[in-house]
Length: 326
Ligand code: GLV
Image (cartoon, helix red, strand yellow):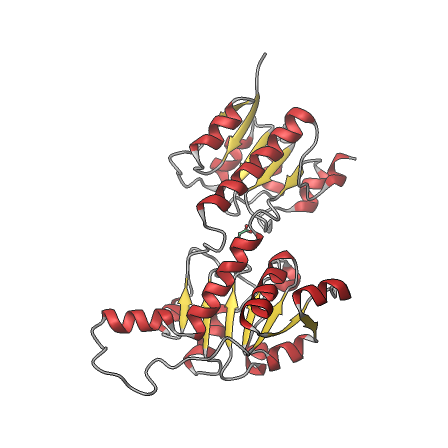
């Protein structure tokens, strides 16, 4: 019997290709060649399923080129690379990889928060540049984490993981703002207090962004919001590029209108706004918040499980648009 054709758009753990090949005729990209939009569309033309990452845009054009496509399994919890309404209209199921990366990503939020507040990267550059000659009372003095106020914008699973770490691990006073308020039980568990966005901006010593990207969250942190923050505050973005206006942030950092920032995601990444590269008080990482080997394997396996679950057994594990099947 002929196997169903699927596409794996990016290089992935070889054992995942092996798992998928048990069920499917797999076209893969283990050479990790960058494909243009047109090349991706051409490769999707005869495929029934696709394994994608956040870098592949599945929109109306891609769908128009892929008449047989039934499912796209994203190896990411975020899915702003998918035009979900267009997928639903074409009855293409979209899946993502929630839960398996929550704790790893929350750990990394804390890594950036601490590196930023305690000026770890600046200190390392200072030392390597041979500038460390002797002790000085204010050398690379940063801000405290324990006992400070941790603000969280976006309070889904990862936001709650960060709140737990802050409250239980570091004795921080945790405040948050979100589209919807948590139940009193969850607020008590994570020890977080709901505040308005304005109070969050004005009060946080460390502000961590963990909300999904959508047109509604575009530049949620821009010049006006940065102006409300304390001059001693740190900003951490582990959510998505585009949530912060990177040009406005670079200016605020240069003028010390906020103390520092830690950024794992950027507008138009992998390009980084050139002004961010020239300010010292920012820690920059290349979108690696979920990058531990066990977590990346768990994400890849969940994306594969979604393809196998849906195309072989009729049920995906983590569908985003189950209404596509109606
Ligand atoms: C990473 O950014 C993800 O959405 O999983």
